[in-house]
Length: 100
Image (cartoon, rainbow, N blue to C red):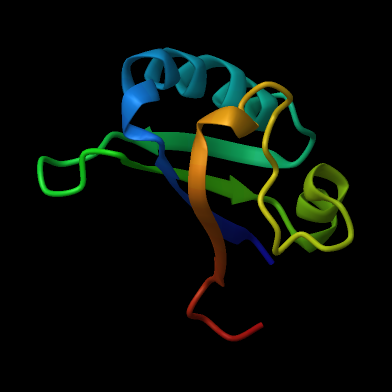
């Protein structure tokens, strides 16, 4: 059953300009290159939350997500070098409404 993964990250405000480009390349490429990743989309902050970003990724199934994120796939996967930007983050998962 497909899984949607929502990764929300709040960054340190003073690193905002430096972070945006790397998030759009390093982080997105890490997901896009993973087997079983069906799609990935990033959203930039609206004016009322200027330091918060969102990545929405869709995965073919739990096994593909576990292969990417590890056995504890409810934890964030932060590419090397990106951890310095993260003030706070969370990960949530959802599946289709239809029953299997």
